[in-house]
Length: 216
Image (cartoon, rainbow, N blue to C red; front, top):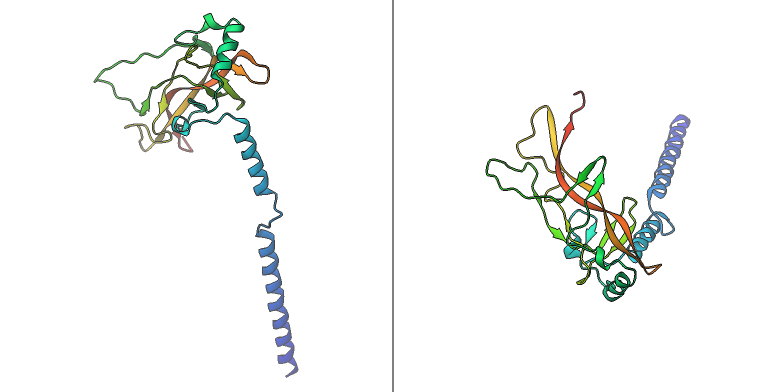
């Protein structure tokens, strides 16, 4: 009887210990109101959205960091500064060609030939951007008004991340990737009320990339 009672006591202690361990683990993994992870994310998001120009989402839903139709865009102020600071005669239909990595990025030309087929589906819109990003994710207000325009030719992947047409096989996997280049455009510095030049990221091409399997 004594041995049976002893076993019952040890079994009860064991159950209590298991319950305590489970409660401790639950408390450790359950988020609390004082947790700093979610507020920190909110703070970073709020800071980015309040400091950046508000972009018309109809124009900026594609996967490239450039947009048009900025709300509250300072058209009159930019027109006045461009004229006052002597930039009026520098605007043309197209920006200057940019030299990138020892080659020149020229304005693209379209050719129609039934014998060729694109292996990555893309679109090539002409844009008059009013907002962009630098390589360092700095927000840039780009000069583009009715009086002073900067037209930019781009190529944007329609289905980024999808396989290239008729290119996959058992030895390799392909993927369409968006390629960006830097293009120097005239921009507006709100803090200094000044027109200046800035390098902005432009979607330049939709390229087929080969993803090699491990061991090859």
